[in-house]
Image 1 (cartoon, one colour):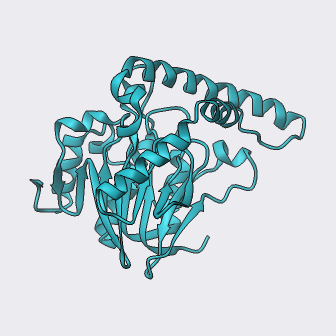
Image 2: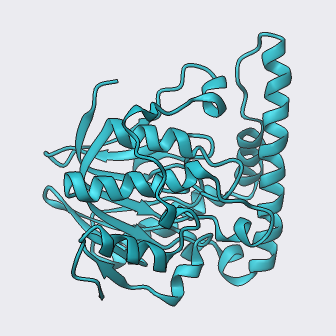
Length: 291
């Protein structure tokens, strides 16, 4: 695949540490798409699952190796925004070291417009006010992803195309309670309060690029099912781009071209934020400081 360069890329909801995370695909995507600025808009690491039954795989670590390589080789600025599943970052944000910053939200200048970027869980009353119910729902979604994989194995054996059972069920439930519409309207209102032309979020795993009255609403989707990102070109134009999957089998069987990968670094095996700081210092990324 030909490498494409972008001014800005925005990804969210990768959920590293879960079985459903498409970490291999996102690493391959970042190999084929370079950028001046990379914004990771929340739920990159799934701390909720890691505290329970989740597990950290080698290809999850490779995601951070790819980010570090982009920073060192391409001088990419990386902005990591906290989501609800990586709320463990609350104890350290805001913080900055080298060209990586970790914070709660961000305002992006794009052409003649300003965009307020936030994960979006601030307007999810279930997540913010009744966390135990949210975690119960998270268990249900994890089960749906597990069931979805087995259902599609059954379809594959019968020559049928991929069908997202979990997306279909989730869409029906959220449509019934007008969840997505309310979520989008609330975020559009937030953009007006912040005196911005648009809002960019994640959280609901629904890629979108549209107008809500006078506000540009964009959602970067996720790397569990939609495998999507937002792209800004040098002229300030935005698009949703997707990982190129021809059929559903590629979602779980896509493999990385490891010919240009170094052997995994020992100091990144059990990655946490302190080890990441130390690793950057070893790589001579200077200016570690709180923001």
